[in-house]
Amino acid sequence: MPVDAHVHFWNPQTLHYAWLAGTPLDRPYRPVDLAAELGELPDLVMVQADCAPHQARAEVEWMRAAADAYPRIRGMVAYAPLETGPAAAGLIEEYAADPFVVGVRRSIQDQKPGFAVTGHFRYGVRALGAAGLTFDACVRHHQLPELAVLARDCPGTTIVLDHLGKPPVATGEGRDAWRAALAELAALPHVRCKLSGLVTEASYDTWTPDQLYPYLDTALELFGADRCLFGSDWPVVTLASDYRHWYGTVRNVLAPAERHAVLSGNALTVYGLSR
Image (cartoon, rainbow, N blue to C red; front, side, top):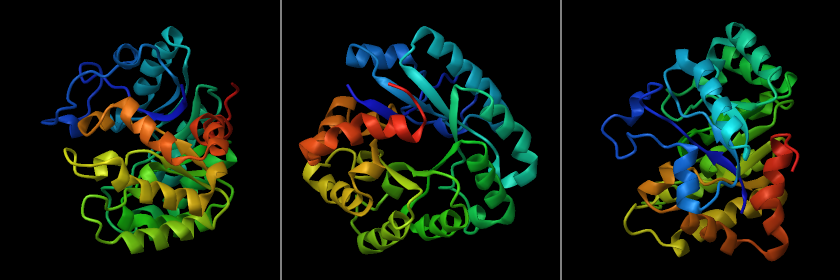
């Protein structure tokens, strides 16, 4: 089993997730559900799932209780409003003092241009590095150049790019621009890349592993196996695949010598976890 660097859990009956409304994912997805699918829970990092921002602390506590029951939940990448700059400092300090919280994600993918390069946002990302926390960046492929600007200005923070920057798999249009922008990020030694979320950028019903391999190969070529880490993006992955199929797709593209690092070791290192 891998060390899965990107799993979501949620229960809409406990916390509010506006983005789930009207989607097939609008139901509870809990550790017990993933364990039932796989037979056992892999070691994993839980990533915040964009509940209502005022419920960020409640989401951490909900997941902490789950981790008490399922010790293979090794840590959490929590939410913080980094765009508020110094106003987020108190929450970041709380997270830094909490061994369960290993990083912060503030999704950028639905924001207007310039959102991630304001002075306040840069302050927030730099504060994460100073506190010993990582920054998970969820962006779409056209936002990668903006993320590169942010990353160059925050060299003291480990930045983890989620989902390969969401390349245009379904259409293929803009693939060259995606690769060029990804190369800019890969040139920065403090940036890592999650091999995750790719099947839901393809056509849900018609994708094939052969369609995804070139994107995975590109990330591995640019970042190297020592800076890529596996993530299932469960349960979002279930819109187009299942856990084992996606895991097998990633595993198949890796050379045997790369598998330990990408499938387990790098997640432990990036998020400061012991085996």
